[in-house]
Length: 249
Length: 156
Image: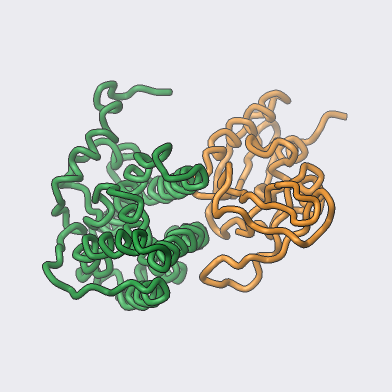
């Protein structure tokens, strides 16, 4: 039973998780302290786990016999449906952590809402992913507050990171074409964006950081429009599989 | 008497926490034997846990070693929680120096830090040192009384 709306939804969420996991993989051993290397490795692994479940289910919904590896390794950048935020380069630690915080706030509210999904597979995954994501958000939110309410330099860099990444947040927090899935209860909540905004505004206030104005907002990631940063990232992710197709460990 | 299929399955060690079994962790939903064919239903723990595939292989090996023909399936629902870890499992974790998880309790959207007992000296003057540890299920702590670092199982 192919449901194109559900398939698109699963790929969007799987791609969001996988692309960010790959970005975080580049930080491991480059983080400012050992605990942070552990944190990004753990978060990356959780995201890969969530992506694997979403892709496996996408393969069942699509009904063409594709497994999780097909979706991760055998699609090009234009076929990836992740929001543009998660493909942005790691920058300095402030950029890495602000990107993570914006993402985690979205992901937590998304999974919270999906626990009530009428789709049993998604609801069961959401129950676990919600808990994992709450640990991610505690971590990234904690850092945003420490950097913002820290030294002059850490505050300056945190504000720069927020200002540079803000234009990707409208894209992140608003998917406007899933009305059919809302109506059927598969994606029960269309208000995730509003809750994202509340969580972010409260954290930035605690961090003494300014909420930027919405100008020059970038959109289209969930529809396959990407920045120039996605292709090289996927090339790195997919190089081994493409050099040795069908290879097994 | 040789162990039953259920005993074999419950007795498989966790690859990352070898002092507890998958039975102790509450991962085994059912073990149904029909002659030599054994159907096992397990609940996976963390979505990104790299031990999941290893656990499936270890269950199959344990059953094949006793000449059974295993068929292992994972079910996602109801989702696994650390509240399913048995009393025996919690005792073994503690004996291995890992503080067992506090009850998950009412669903709160953010993790809550419950004061944990030091598995070495029993003091509750303990402090979480970081958000993440060496495996998905654990976080590093330190005891303020005996000064020893220890690991704690996350409530999940």
